[in-house]
Length: 111
Length: 113
Image (cartoon, rainbow over all chains, first blue to last red; front, side):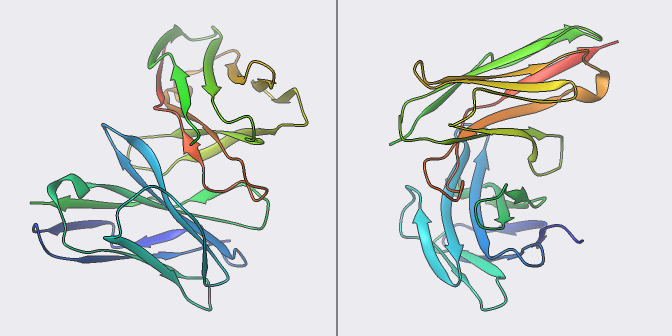
C-alpha cells in the first residue's frame, strides 16, 4: 500500500506570495492532518480534516487554511507569506481512531 | 491548552545500553500518547503508542510507560543499536480519534558503536 505523498517536496517563494501544498493520504484514510515543523517551535498542529470538514484547528493565523476533497486528498494554503513561514510542512493521514502516518513533508523556503 | 515537555533534548549512549526519554503533559483530558522517530529527510514514523487505560506497553526492544496521576510517560529502548540514532518525539492528544497531536520538542539520540 502506498504511503502518504506530498507535493511538491521543495518550494521557494518570496515574501508576500501565496502557496498551495498538496497531500494524498493512504488509500482508505479519511482523516488528514497538517503540521508545521521548525527548529525553533518544533512540530505544531495546524488543522485536521475529515470527510471534507475541518474537525480540529491549531493556533495559527487565518493566513493558513486548508481543504479536503471528496477523495480525501487535501491541500493547505498559506497567503501573504512571511519569512517565519519557512518550515517543513507535514501531512499525516489515519483511519478513524488509529495511528497517524506521516508523509515526507514539503520544505518551504520564504525569501 | 495542552503543553508537552520532553527531556533530555540530547542523549548519547553506547551500543547495547538502554535509553530513556521522559515527557510530561499538562492536560489531564489527554488520552493518547504516541512516540515518533524521525530520521534525517523523512517524516516522523510511529514506533509505539499507549492509551490512557493502559499503564505499560512493550514491543520487542521498545516500551512505553504511562503514569496518569503524575501526568508523565516515558520511552524505554533496550539494547540500543546504531540504527536507533534519530530524533524521537513524544506527543499527546485529547480527542478520541488520536489526532491534533501536541508534540514535545524532541530528543536527539546518538548510539555509538
